[in-house]
Length: 351
Image 1 (tube, rainbow, N blue to C red):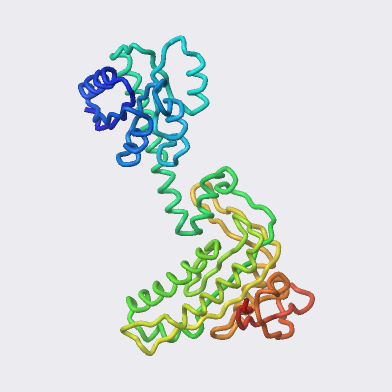
Image 2 (tube, rainbow, N blue to C red):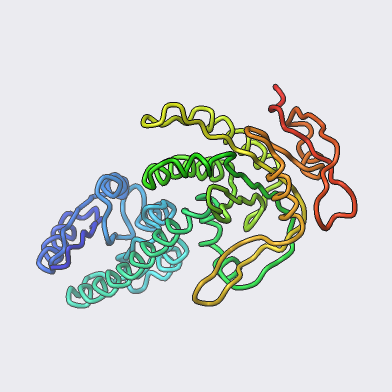
């Protein structure tokens, strides 16, 4: 038994019955359709593992059926075998263009057909296994980056999953809880873990919702990057929106066991050129960003008060039409010859 379902499509009842009987004897579960239109409905209701279709039928042809199936994401990898005369070169060329996986001549030699179908089924099994592994990899990557970024990494692994780095402009967001350490010292260990998990869940959700990459956790602090490994024109705006959403989320975060407890974040954001890439070894890699601009963002975060979002002048220049701010003058940062303009983000502008 194959545990596979095959969709047989033929407008000739005799041929349809012959294939149904033979394939059932070979161990397939058989779905039978008398037209391409009926086959499409059957396939959507009960997705088959293989499709065996005559080419020449009234209504849609087998070639058109193949093209429609291959255009559908669900059936892109489903093997389609077309039944046609040996001499029908035109149908074979059209079938290849439509994505047909194999051809079989009528009248059918059933033993050969059985072998061909078994070979295609094995190939489909390998494709399904590879697709499952890709989904697993995307799920694992999705714990570090948004779904969109994970999909981009899967699509171009040779670029993103290798040791090395490149210069690029990003917006770096540092966030850290204010005054949590003395609070944590008075709590049971499990309570501390539960509180941090609730807080970090909201952080991760906000970062991913705005297309950011979660670089790392640092105790009760977080480093997120907007613009690497995938860049967007509005990365600075996404980072600022993420920061404001985080501050809103902290105001609504409560704990049943500690109703008096409130968490407060200080957030610093900077935009500039960094080295972004994968560092480490072939056995253990870490995607991160390094450089002076990262240190600037960290310095701004350390100077942010509870509930405050501090952004640098370079970030402000890119989001000035988006936010209302309060100018704070300049902030001294180690490695900078002069102070860096600092702005306290008050809110998003209306409209």
